[in-house]
Image (tube, one colour):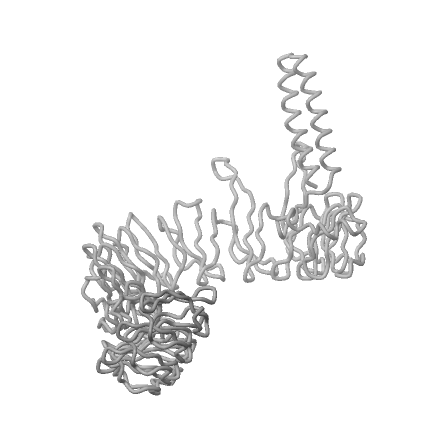
Length: 604
């Protein structure tokens, strides 16, 4: 079909060129033109005999639909990817179909075929199209110039009509058939669109009083009965049960309902589709809004008016925004530099570079003082000022202080935040965590355990249940997250993951030493405890260094020795100088005499 269309246009162009050249008598040019046309025909024929360039109406992505692997394995020149039960194949210039087991179900006998869709496929023989089912049975005769896939049970068809005055000029008329091949709407229209929600747009070409040709549109139902007469220059799609129409290609506008009734005269200069039970209309330079009966609900007095988003719409006067409701009542005067749409009964508004929030009564529930205000989510709105973020409630009250450098809106009772917390040494450490709707900071330890911070105090929460009072000065998870270090009344102790104390709160300092060990200090003496709170060494050392090869240097007064991870001293505390172990040995010095010891503490 595509090949014949191309040749038709080539004939038309060539006939025009040839006619012009004969008129001027350019014989040499005529000869060159003939040679050019013959070459062009050859190229066209050659191209048509090559591997098919698929023009599937349904996908439009032919090159991507070829199954390269199956094309190489099977006898066919091209095997397309399966679209449902069957896959198209191309063989010796014809299309057919195979099933999932690569068995030929429909012999390649069609000049073109579409993929199956809803149990039907379009097929073409000698530039005539019809529909077949998955058994290859013709359900719509292959006799139409074109046919579309059925929409709502009816398929759009076209037939070719030749002009009686010029046999080269073709004209196409449109109609509809059902999936049994019965003509439901005769092909009498110069234009038609597929059915949508029981209606289809159709048109016929007519000449106006000045002799100009134009299309006039109307609507038909599924029985082919006219819902509107053919009189409109344009009919839009239906929105909210209504479609905008124009009699004169856009000079004046009105609306029709699904029964074809005009709910307004075609009198407006400009209109917009119905949204939220209102349609905007413009006349004499000013906008208003009508309801579904065509009655004016918002007087036509606004130079700029936006569509209703829910109950409210924005208007624009003298470079300022305001809001009205669906009855045309003013919610706020036009005084804001910028506004966002209402969401959940609230809208963000901006004036003099600062944001605030108004409610559904137009009241500002917050002062316009924020750099950022997001929409409410779970009764909380994220606000930002001077680089810090927090949350307000629906009364505009700050319920989460603006102390977070980054934050996201609430989701499932929590909001993600970035925060800084001092560690035991007072250094500010950045963390990722959450806040809940009570404003408590939740620092995750694992999927179910959180350290809770409220104000300056900490507690432990497990599965959304508080397991301790929020009365600790500080809590953090130890490196292996099997226990928690807590500070209370300036003293440190160890808690298990349920918040139960594992040690007395008697240590002045603590510091992670290894995977399961903790350095602790009291009265300026250091010792080691494990994460279960058990003392590995007594608090007797002036200094304890990190482990190297499972040996740690320890110091009492000015002398050094070594201990194991279990706290056992492998040498007396007797060396004036000692180094960490490396490759099983460590250098030591005693009484100005240097030596080397092994991992057992033996001098060599």
